Image 1 (cartoon, helix red, strand yellow):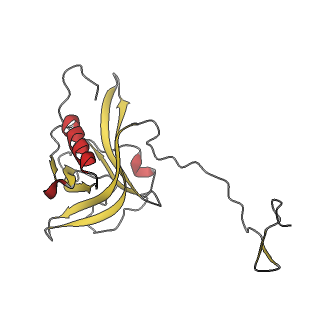
Image 2 (cartoon, one colour; image 1 turned 90 degrees about the horizontal axis):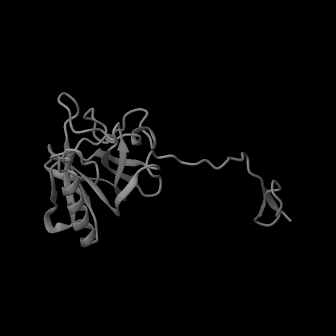
Image 3 (cartoon, helix red, strand yellow; image 1 turned 30 degrees about the vertical axis):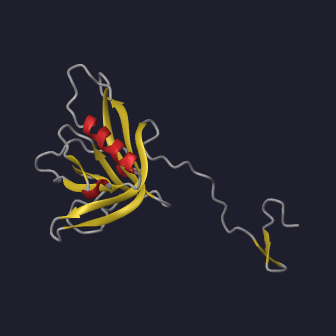
Length: 187
């Protein structure tokens, strides 16, 4: 009884509920499908608020450093991506660029870096997302190194519980921020 598809489900005695709408399963595309994951760990993302002179938490989730080959001849580009746990909202989408400032947080609990975050609003309104910002829209391509006249880089930090992961992330970002040698496209 009530076990066949479309018949509904029996709840609380004799009451039967039927689904109002049947929704098909959809594959969620993030833009990360063709990228190689160089680093992945759970952590908390912070943005440094210069006006208040303090760190503001922006979310918790999976932090990744991804790499992909683009251009002719193919050159490897790396970016940092972080999605919030649960709803997969994009928190961080930033390119790793030559000379990018990278250092340990106080107490070696995380890593700080100066980047332009394509997933964050750039109009100065605190906490408000730009219209049209979503999971896939901003994730297709991370911004390149900061450009003159464009959004200014801000100081961001990712705090990770495992000290070995903090060290591994710092080492990887230090390596990726080095300008590529002539003819070298490998990470």
